[in-house]
Length: 451
Image 1 (cartoon, one colour):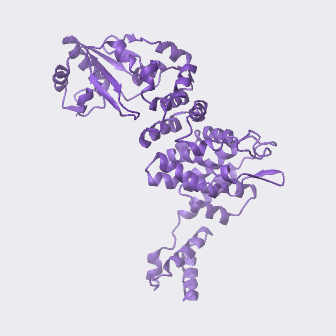
Image 2 (tube, one colour; image 1 turned 135 degrees about the vertical axis):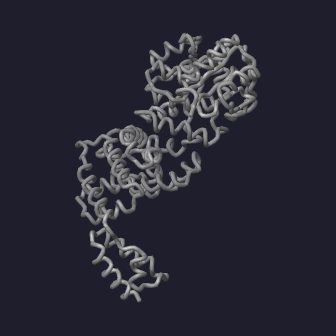
Image 3 (tube, one colour; image 1 turned 60 degrees about the horizontal axis):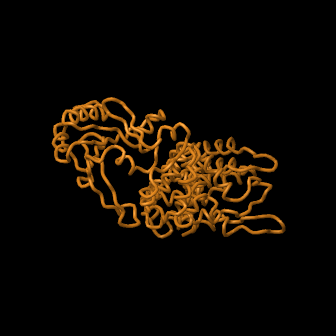
């Protein structure tokens, strides 16, 4: 059992002890920012000023087992708690990568110098743990009130290219504007040396925490920073669409609208991150399939032709095979729900479609996002009632007993090279709503004909 009731109580206890030794503890970073915005944040970061490193280690040891997250960086935890306890440090860039820095711990550098190494003014705020006083050297409170993302220092900001993505994702998450000077500075920064893991982390925050993820990409576009990591997305800029079905404009505009629609449904998907990535990637194929056919803009087959582009993009930003396969599946099928609904297709067709989907419910929400993420000349036809009704039918069918391999073996069939064909036939009967007893009889009859 932990000695203190949560990280905040532990922070106050540590701050009291540090104070007795002549030092001061501050809450820093996102914890202060979010507290002022009224946003709950379980990640608490604390910075300790005015005591030497060895003394701090001794102080912390009285509160439990000390874990050195990065002893050379002056970062510690107490076992059983998620409170990050750091000392002020200085960083000097020695390369282009996110981790290419020499770090020096300096507990006596002062609050202004410590805050100056932060990326944005809203993240440079500090709060005295014991008194609650806010230390604001760079106008962070004003920027919070005015909804502005503004960098703290020209030279130190430019040393870390990850901050380009952080600026964009903060703008998306908080619905803030990025200061023009910060946009200009980001436009000059090279992102190519960043690792895919860091790119994926910032991208995930934008996709999963923002009500309008499109803001993230619109800022990257404004900064001209799409080229390396998001080049397939850049390629859909200016790609035309049939104005009868897409009066909103090009594929980029449609994709941004779909992203913001998808954010409304992401929590309903089995894999919310995969769902949002599919919304981002679903029309990549239009960049290579769009053509003028008898005076009409068409993108025939874009949902399948675009899959190699989607896969290339995903492999660039992640190593999660399961995630990649989930996204590819949704992208491949994203046209089917609305197409089948528009022709009032039969249950057999919709069952087959849902059977192909790794996440049938997410496929419906993807179709809704695609449908509402556009402007039609004659208005949008809603399909969700039809699709959810059919999804319910599919789920009901799939919940009933069905023919399995062991049933065929018990009936006398040998598990030979034709066995998978028999199982596929049985599955088709299941999708058609045939009860297990009749399906087994029909499958056995089918097998006899194949002998």
